[in-house]
Length: 350
Image 1: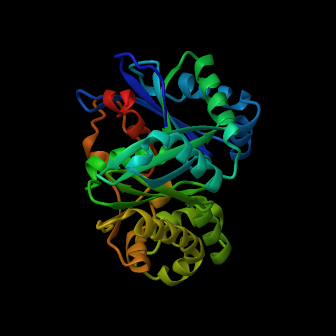
Image 2 (image 1 turned 120 degrees about the vertical axis):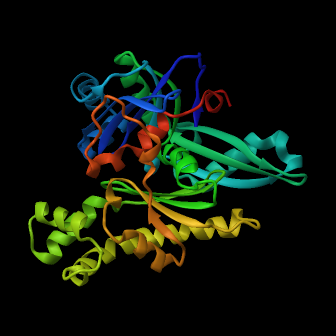
């Protein structure tokens, strides 16, 4: 997480992902959305904008602000979410006696577990727990080029970025207060092209991910059942894994992609249990994201991981007032950006 000097002024959330870009403005005093919007992105072009030339990013951000906005924004101050798949987060412990050399311990973690030289990364860390013997530290790292290009794009359009965080941290912020996220929780955020996985235990303790998402589900159904992509999408969101005459065929089609997600989720759970859990036990799995709209997907994760799982629905805490709401099937896309727009002042000062 990168923090910048903050002045007392309302903020808005901007979530730049690998397949879309979303913005949201919330009046936190009234818990009322004043504006929001989304624009789809070409995955190859946005990757190029992250890594090299940000012209595509600037063009689409401008289009989002000028043509895709529903309602209005309360500010130009932005909390920016970046793709979790492009960040590296780890939690580790060190003896209290080593606190003075914490920066060196972080550098060692970066060298051991991150496949990029430290001079190409922005690295930040925070002590999230301490007792008389040990410190628990969360470390996040992100490629410098990605941060520099997104910052430059925002600034070129008059937006002032006050904080940057991985998108999964914003999702966790929403779930912590709306879906019993105060319990040790596994978050499975299924996007269009990627799935981000995290353990939320007070804060995000570890993240993981896999290049499988809702688009994979649609393609697999189309291939297995010999139908068009449009029909495959309808089968996915209307029938999915739920009981019915098509359940067997759809389950067969969806199982390989879902198993990829389950395999990565098991790895994240294992790391938490072996390295971080202490005496705490994971209590639930919350499935969110635009790819979570598959009937029966909660039961699938419950059976595979032997842990209560369900799709999360945090929208009850937001009031859209006079602003037209997103269509029901698209609301899950906005969970992350609503978390970005809900950052407290204290979180930016830390």
